[in-house]
Figure 1 (cartoon, helix red, strand yellow):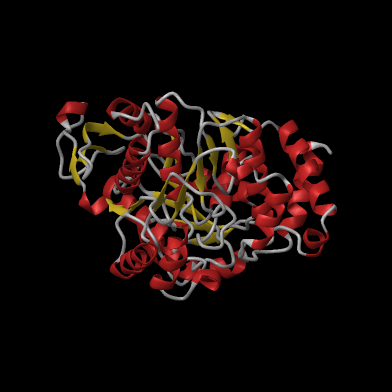
Figure 2 (tube, rainbow, N blue to C red):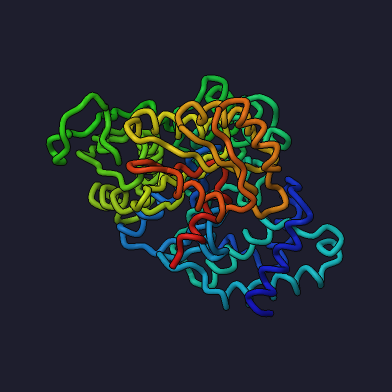
Length: 441
């Protein structure tokens, strides 16, 4: 099997759609020798921020001397981004070899032939196989969707984390915040501590209820003392903002951790919450015996974290701001950032979304902040019709146009942005990925 054949085989599984449940992944992993038992892990669920927390935690572990396995989704440009050991994405040859093994196992099992794994289940199995083969000392696993019935939820983690929970994937997870939070809290384990980001009251109540039911200790970011860093200490002019961009802050945790002037590499005040969650998570790893996690590795890990496509500013003529916000809460965070840190720049929005996303609400948040909106089509089956997006945007903004491709949308945005303008790309991580492909040399 070649690399291209492997990707085509995995894509054929994607056509089967989303089918929550653990029976298929457990059966598949059992046939593969249960690779997920070969390494310790941490498991991170949530609606927004879970990828950032995974990136922070992995960076801290690298600074502590480890080469962790890291499993995240979706990828932006290449499939290999999903499965990383240390800082090395899985080689394409390994994708081909492991996918061939996977296909053989599925073909040889009657139950798996009749009820094949989903795309995400298959890629999760690939990650576990690769991590076992590479003998990773620990794996950082980002939940795909939900928690209780997600394919990653077959591990017994050393610690867990639940980031901000918002309304998303309501078809599968529930119609209320409490129902969604209960699904996310399915990653909790008896006796295994989880770090929990700041939540809406209904979500926090649901998490506490599940934690209490099974005896899972939780530690809250709201129990930490977070203080903005000194502008003067970092050579920035004093101003009305509470945080620099990227943020700098000092932190005291309930476990006794004291961290002064943490300088983040990722933009946005919301990243402070994600970083604090990662600190609590890695402090817990230290408490259960993972060596080398201390103030130095935590500070340097947070400072050197790389997580593309999340308020990623690319300097040029014009500047581009790539943000994969793909739900209402994510767009609210982006809108707050634009108001706080980019208010002086005229802005052009390039927007596309998936069919299952609340595009109207997302545009409600973003349209008032830009002088022009360009909608386009995502080159995926689940991409929303750009004519529909154009109608939504036109009801909210006087200057809206439609481009037939992402490349055309980017070209029009850059050509018409004007001096000192900022082109904002948002609505979908798939859109951000397409833009990054276009920008690649």
